Image (tube, rainbow, N blue to C red; front, top):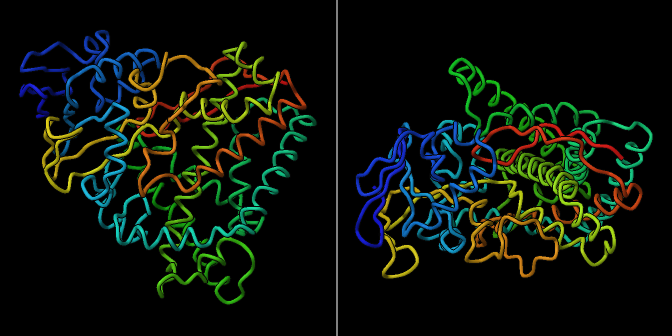
Length: 439
């Protein structure tokens, strides 16, 4: 049960919402009343405005709502900007170690594939992050930024000559994937196979599936992950013998406090970089093109002065679209959220950080549902709420988006989406399967 500031309790269950014991009806009725069962896959298939209204209702409540899940003890939904920031920046209280995704990774999966950095706490997280940060040398990053410009130019060249119909597969997915492969030093030959494995490994994250598919798909996803990590482990062994100037070489030869990445840690990091770096940037790029199409006044403002407005446009796209919807944390100790008079969360309880809701918090953002590329300040949580798990790739993602949009709109000012994006209903990321476009 979730304890409110006044001592009453509020729950969301699969049958609807109860507040101080009063049931408000079915999940459908609750959605109509701007509140919903966040654990019900049906909620994530609702229209975006309906979901936004539900989160607005949750932000008005005096304390985080407790959401019951089909298994386990459920979780408290952190939907306000301040609460998400507090949980992100208090890692000694809000632990990542038990797992940040839903469902949490099984122990045997973590043993077999290694722990992703997102599922680690200090001191191990800090140690691994130092190794990775040390590998991102100024020389490497300068080469990466040059690479981004070259790849973006090549992709827009291809758009000009081939006139593809889908922006996601032809542009939005290709840019971050090629950038990361070049940065890591992945040879050309296995790249298509790796991209297939990335798609198989991530295609059902946070997506409701029929029982038959749920039985079949985890094996497919784990097999894809194993193949992908096997490829990278072999490259790591090769780079230890013959280092080059790529990121894999830097990672396997870096020595921080006498520590280097093991083959399994290298594979886990590469998987995180590909899935997080490719999926999130791909989705943000696609959402951005559609937002600029759906808001012609903002598009005209941007194209009128790219130098002035491009950075703000990228941050507003990330705020408005919020590529990652949620991460979860586990309470290490009893904690009062927001201060000594705040609601009490107990040790061992779970919380889920809803970044998309935090990015629409009326207490922080004026007219939060509006798309405004001149919004300032714009303290969005699209890369996390700060703290030790703030996204390592935030600068890279921003650069990719700025360079691609500059190249595209400079050469094709009429570039725009056609129709609505084809979305994949997920409670984990704001995923775009396809987006038709024209230049």
